[in-house]
Image 1 (cartoon, one colour):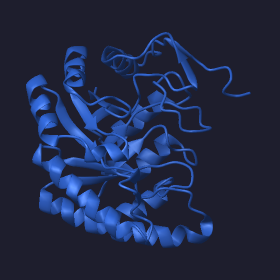
Image 2 (cartoon, rainbow, N blue to C red):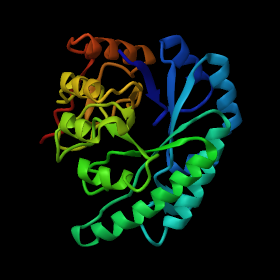
Image 3 (cartoon, one colour):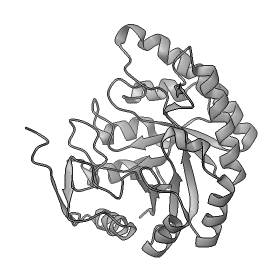
Length: 282
């Protein structure tokens, strides 16, 4: 149904990773890592490995959190100018190796109700500037749907954020929506969705579990994506190693994601090698 991809989040980005993706049937990659590591990677090597192993660099997750001493936060007035500048530099580096979609967090947190309007306005100004930089690079910015107090946690906020520039698009994260149904959010945002972050959760906190380990209605997600004409990649954002919240028989491998996707696409219950940690809900 969709091409299958896997984010590099919480993975060591080296030649062996590209080899593992290729041999395991993963043809699409989102380049992602902790904020400080962005200053250490060699983009040319990544482009070289992608070409050698036939792994398409589908997207790049722009840094979020703290890197080089200050936060990457487009919504924070004290840091937004620096964030826009640094994001622009990373977009140019990614574009140079063929990446054309850049996922961005519109904010960090915690954002209380008294400051939410101010943070929304600042984020919108930042996104408008980044959209212009993206045009200059021939690429697209995709604003990620985020949880909790972050900006973009409901579809109405996402519509407002992306409404500042017609070129802005959306990265829908199946593990982040807690105030709205996944399928409703997808249908309201519609064809602005150009990429996904696929993982499962328990509707209590984001978990980044393998689909089938949580409570997401995958049939509902697929139906909604079909309704809005989504034609991109089924991009997993799940680590190989299990978080403490889940107990697995072994670390995941690229082949596990391919099997998981095929089972979901076929309407079958995913094969699991895990159970929820019994300590989680105590």
